[in-house]
Length: 230
Image 1: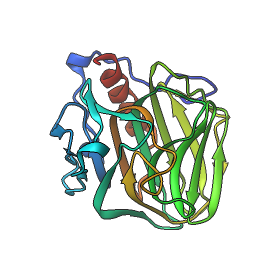
Image 2: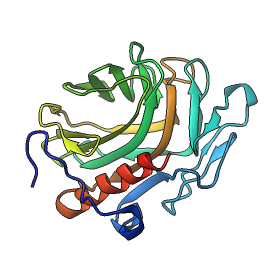
Image 3: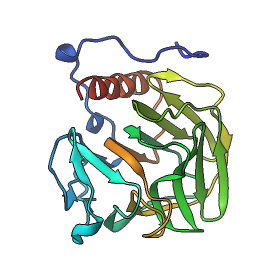
Image 4: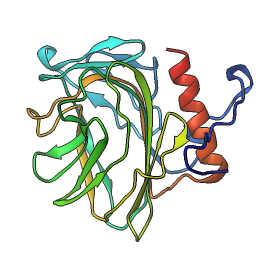
């Protein structure tokens, strides 16, 4: 059951756990740890060919434990087709990450500087800009120097956000905001601003799908197993 600080992982051992993100319909991008990754491209494992690419060597991240290690300066990747979430659609974003520095703004996805982005704003806030409509999701614990898990869901129509960290429901990390999310950059804002400083080991997004119940439990168990295997 979900509750304040309650774990929502199943406790199933890795060798007995078979759920994968594509078991839930609506997955639009999935950069899977240690799978089809090179410094110039991290292929999408969702089946939608939303590959993250970067042809300029000076803007390429290094590979660390099967994910990208962004330098916090000018490493970033682009999508050939924008990831577009409708204004009143629900969605789920999940990632395993490691911040090298949580005192700076770390952008995960963006379109441009002032239009649409998702970033770690500081050590306890995720900020999401939906084409000018901003929500600050407070109450998180984005500790620098450690491998961590973050899941964000946004409810359809109401725009109510909910966050889960390291396999537990944070309860306090909520915010309400509808709006369009258009993401075409990975790891930076507007090609040159608020670059991600750290590692993204795995990341995925479901469009028009809010994971709940057993699916949410399975997702958090899956992410926990990814982190524990790094």
